[in-house]
Amino acid sequence: MKVPSASLDLARRDADLSQLELWLRYFGLGGMTPALEFEAILMGMLDATDHDRDVIAHALNERFSELGRNHPVPYSDDES
Amino acid sequence: MTALGKLAGSVVAEHGRVVVAVHGEIDIATAPQFRALMDAALAFGGPQVTVDMAGVEFMDAQALTVLGRVAKRLSIGGGRLVVQAPSAHTYRVFQLTRLVGLLGVEPPMSTTALGPGLETLAIGPHARDLLDASLELVVSVAADVINGADGVSITLPSSSGFATVAASNDVVLGMDHDQYATGQGPCLDAARNGERYVTALLSDEPRWPDFVPKARVRGIQSILSTPLLAPDRTLGALNVYSSHPEGIADPELEWADRFAQAAATLLQRAESTQGEMALMADLQGRLVTRDVIAVARGILMQRLGVTQEEAQATLIRASRSTSLPLATVCAEVVESSRPPPPDAGA
Image 1 (cartoon, each protein chain N blue to C red):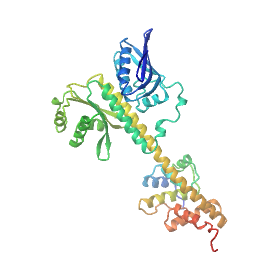
Image 2: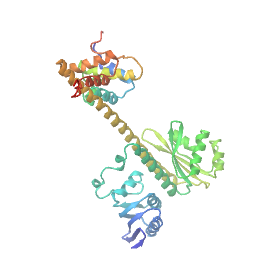
Image 3: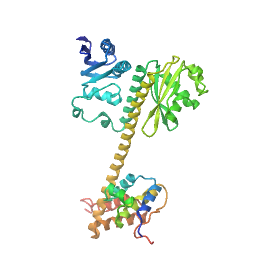
Image 4: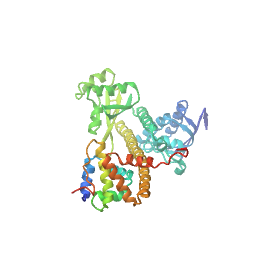
């Protein structure tokens, strides 16, 4: 399932993270995209690979786990 | 040139310029001599007095107080004070209290020789102490420089409402607490509304009916609370209390504003330093997990003969299916591939 950038950014807001805070988490999980391009992805200006989206989704889902919630952000291999 | 203990100085007036050269240390012991030297300079009638600080090896709040008074007297008469050639240490004292502009301090000849600033060095628990010490300096200098002031304090919002972070004496601290306790008063209104509140005579003051009687018991007759302003919001208030009726009037109001500006700048700088420090600490932690993940990825690449991306995807799938954080999964992978001790099985 292809996750649109807009929904990643919505999830980011729902997770109460700034773009920089989410990038730091993504970077901490081994993400390779620099912060500026990362912001462009969230804003829908750049396309990310499925792999990159999954790392972003995972960073968001780990955050939701910390907040005691389930994993609401889908991955590329989830059933659509 | 007169030599007075640890302090020596001279006053030279020529072509309408008055230059004071100071050598030695300015502290509580030598402050009276420094004040006398500056009074001698003021006696020439200005309009400009230049203080050459090249020979000053040490100065504390006492020097700031004397210079503050001189700057104010000159500015009221349309003149100005210029402080020249401070040493790196001396310039730091001016900078830390944000009084550089107010006291007309020119930067040292070589700013590159300054090295890292005290603010940069004071990372960690000391940053808070440094901010408190700087605010204490600002209120003590303000209390000395503002005519009619019996005390000056700074109010900031706190988790429990409002709190005093610096006060020049216990009476003003009590005055602040009376306002926090009654929930009313000029310092609260200034800190909330970002406007200046002046009460010339408390006995005629209809606002704050619960607080005013308490203030009068403490012998206070007039109050000024001026907001500490950031570009986009109000940070708190600087409060000046006087035991004289109409104790604080123009031009003292303007001077209070200048000290409030110095305090506001200090607070904003401290806020951004704290933000940067939190970000650095976060980044440091994330670099550690990133490292563990990179090692685990490398192990899987070799074990499974997959690409870097495939290894990362495998690890994320493991994290999802176990509901363990990716860093924990990776730490286990790294741990599992640790070679057995050399004498294992021996």
